[in-house]
Length: 532
Image (cartoon, rainbow, N blue to C red; front, top):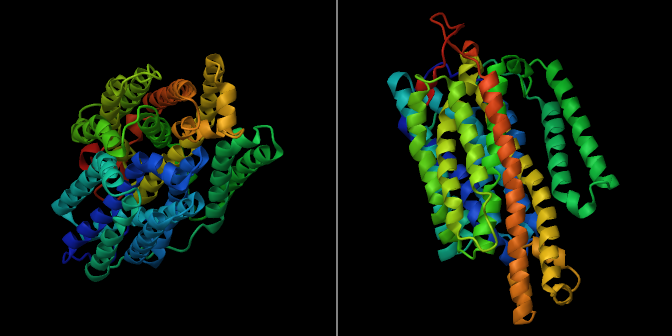
């Protein structure tokens, strides 16, 4: 993912380049956040299981994580504008298929295709901007780009809520079609092509082994409860994932131009930054799915009402980020990262008070702390990922950091989901048995009671029962859900705490570099201000 520009750096059309890239990246990041609040509506419409809902998010995150670095290498080789436009075409087409989906499988396959397009767009976005802008204008362009990223994450839940409630969940995908077509037209007519003259090829073996290992790991985590953790299938998938990951590491060590340059991890600060990215995504971001389901399936809020209740978190993240960016030149970056992840840990613990009868306000202190924490971490994390490598390696560094984020989301949702499913089923069943209505519920569910509860079909199931039985069933579901949510909140808090320790211990000032006058790199303090 070398960001080397073409020989001639054109000024004409540079603002069109920024517009096209910003619109495309806004669209792909918005699609990450808008989907969460639409999941209960998708579940009811397509009769999805809980595992199906996990794959709606994970299919996108998996392909994005698996292909991000390869897409950057292809862009250097074939042309960044070409790969960017191809990504737009793939993402837009897949969005239309998502909206037209009539089965969970069709939707999840289309979501995987969206991730492929998203990887192609995300991998080329910064390189296209860097190729078009010079001097002070480049700083302005990166500032606009950063603001667009923050805005997409901030307004995503609200936009998703409005579209889902007022029109239908399909429109969170259909809205991408005209935007994607417009962005592609601008890119084809206004954006100048660029590539890396030194690019030699693509690490296909690395792509295959990494993608396969990641898929097998997530598949085993998602299906483990249903098929049995000791079953030959699940054990085989887990062992195969470990073997493939080991092969991937060997392949990368032997490649001249590896997909994942392991030599970068020799700097503890670089390894620490990627641990921070993984732990933040695997804790805070992975929980959005489960918090959304709690607000809608237990507390009964609509998608729009749910989006509104996420605003304290998302708006605070957007507001705190610029302040954190300015602090990176005054406060050691490791302290900002450590404090942000520690605050994430506290925010998750603050939400563990949820009960079956709680109001949504029990989550509000945690939402406020979490939004502040995310805003505190994101700018120094972005600056650290590129400030600890030589400037010519910045493309690879940012790609690796983004990959760790997506792997954190994919594995976090799957691993937390395995615990969530087990606790929900066990505690809901125990509560229902204590009420004396377990047999009635089992008959109404035609023997598939646990599957119905795990899929969030308690309300529909209650309609087939007596009023007293329905009340007992809904209470049992609420108890099981609250206990399951509490369990994964504690696990996520522990992961965030581990990330905080890694940040403070590994992100050392002496590992940071800046460009030297002669084009090399010298040891220095972080260049966070320029990036943030």
